[in-house]
Length: 57
Image 1 (cartoon, rainbow, N blue to C red):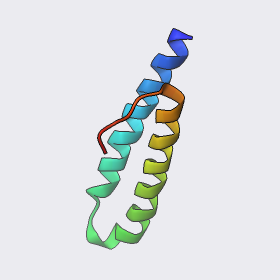
Image 2 (cartoon, rainbow, N blue to C red):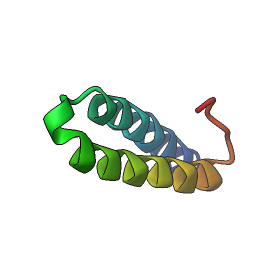
Image 3 (tube, rainbow, N blue to C red):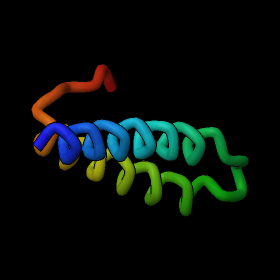
Image 4 (cartoon, helix red, strand yellow):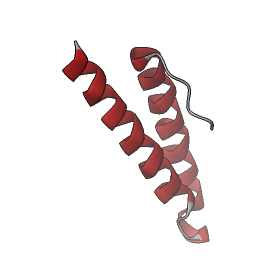
């Protein structure tokens, strides 16, 4: 259980980092970046439910 929670926290942090990396992409990638960013946000909220924490988005 502890290991599962730790993995979920790790995934959550990775998703947050990926989301910010996508948000920093150039203007030419904006549409693709926005879609990826929304996916990342959805993934983050899903993982938050799994872990039971809230990140300050």
